[in-house]
Amino acid sequence: MVFQYGEKETDYLKRCDQKLGAVIERVGHIERAVDPDLFTSVVHQIVGQQISMRAHATIWERMQAALGEVNVETVYAAGVERLQGLGMSFRKASYICDFAGRVRSGAFDIEAVRNMDDAQAIAALTALKGVGVWTAEMILLFCLERPDVFSYDDLAIRRGLRMLYRHREIDRARFERYRRRFSPYGSVASLYIWAVACGEVEGLTDPAPERSAGRKRGTQKR
Image 1 (cartoon, rainbow, N blue to C red):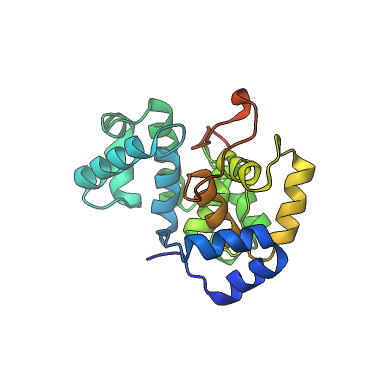
Image 2 (cartoon, rainbow, N blue to C red; image 1 turned 90 degrees about the vertical axis):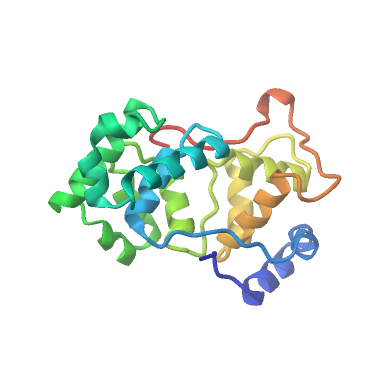
């Protein structure tokens, strides 16, 4: 499954921002995988914090091979030591097992998150150990397919904004101006700003001083 969007979203973004519109025309339709299962999405996001995409993929493949299926029962039965043996840190393994235990016992109703608005869902998810705002926002985008996710905490988004609009810095106030401009289709804008940050638009470079440049895969309790 991939994130669903179409001409309604892209036409809106083209109208409200000429530079982003040019990127949309140049890059074309973007297909980004989504995981509709909330439990596995949370686990997947925790696994990927602070590591490269390649390491993330490797550990996730090991989990699938070792557990057969990544679900509440298999994760709970595996326990911290076995999960850590798959290549993740002890802290991540403990966060994941705590999450599985809370879902299994009913202390956390994961499916209830589907019916919450964005702010409520972020508040609920960030109450979990190891889940911060950025992680919650990525779950909203790549699991729940919420249409208006544009994350200040994602360094790749801020780098892409610098590259496209030639800013040396993206502070909160400037970011909010772009977020409001792209709303209510911030999620689709995110896909294209990530494409810019990843170098898919030839000729765009990051004007920030070297010390400010970077890409954020994740941090604990982000």
